[in-house]
Length: 247
Ligand SMILES: Nc1nc2c(ncn2[C@@H]2O[C@H](COP(=O)(O)OP(=O)(O)O)[C@@H](O)[C@H]2O)c(=O)[nH]1
Ligand SMILES: [Mg+2]
Image 1 (cartoon, rainbow, N blue to C red):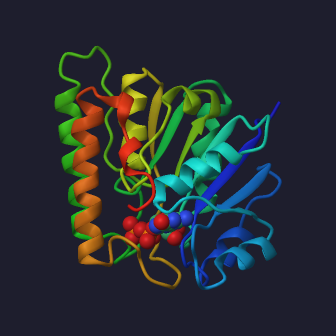
Image 2 (cartoon, rainbow, N blue to C red; image 1 turned 180 degrees about the vertical axis):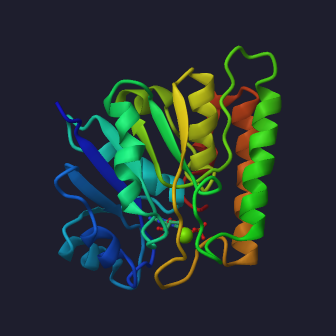
Image 3 (cartoon, helix red, strand yellow; image 1 turned 60 degrees about the horizontal axis):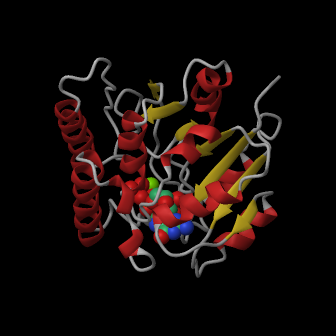
């Protein structure tokens, strides 16, 4: 029996791309496409709905949007898939991303843009560097572990078994969300696989993170914070004090 898949797309002011992203959905493979819009001022939500998505809203923040989308997934959905709303991720990679979960071979699949083909200008040098640095640090955290998980990226296009997702008790509401999931996946002993995915430049609009020096610095700080806080143990209280404001 084929699994039930929910696609979750956080989208903030992505009017130029969201219609295209939603209309490209392989509807025969998925149960639903949830677009989480928390404060767009450009009609992103209406465009997404017209293209066939279920649109919901959430608190502000990338992680908050991902969490709200996960909680809104239909009852009976087995696999949660996350991707961005700016057209950078390539939906043709979906079957490779969910296949190992569907077959029972893995619990969490992450698409690595570093292993895949990247359109020129789609990722900044600093993002590539951050991926390498985080993976090096996570290797150090895993010294002595019997089976190591090797990540090369913190990419947004990823799939997780819903039961495993619930076990992780995700709570980071900012851009640290992706890394929190990766670290907790290691800590909970999930069967993790990384596959190569392609990555394109955003279709239009502006980046909320990598295109802006201040936002990038904030995201980098969040990522380090998550790396040390979740990586070194205190996973229980993650995020409670940062509801609301941050991305
Ligand atoms: N709902 C929601 N989506 C967000 C927020 N911040 C970013 N996003 C979305 O998250 C995705 C990644 O953001 P993007 O600006 O492309 O980051 P970059 O790819 O790292 O430059 C895009 O689909 C954004 O629209 C937010 O605060 N709320
Ligand atoms: Mg982007």
